[in-house]
Length: 85
Image (tube, rainbow, N blue to C red; front, side, top):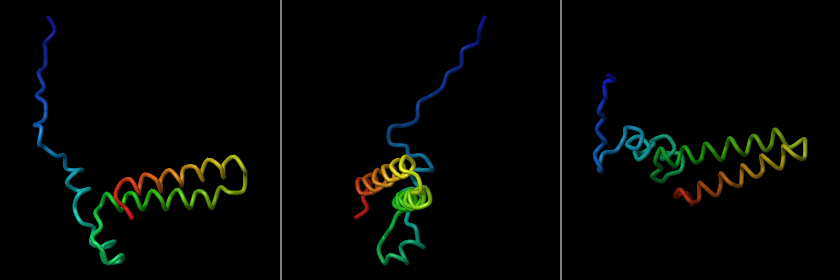
């Protein structure tokens, strides 16, 4: 007979360690921007920077420029939706 394994579900109010880290204040960017910045917002800023630099580096060809520009605008949209001004 096969042994069954039981797993319990996490509590409804429990937060993962990543969620705690994402909600905590980032001191480096907070001192640079002179405003309270969370690690989640830093991830949004980093995503926008990577998308922008890929747009600059891949702008030699029309197709790659269009893809990277779309990625850049979508990253700006998600950053705006994520709480950045």
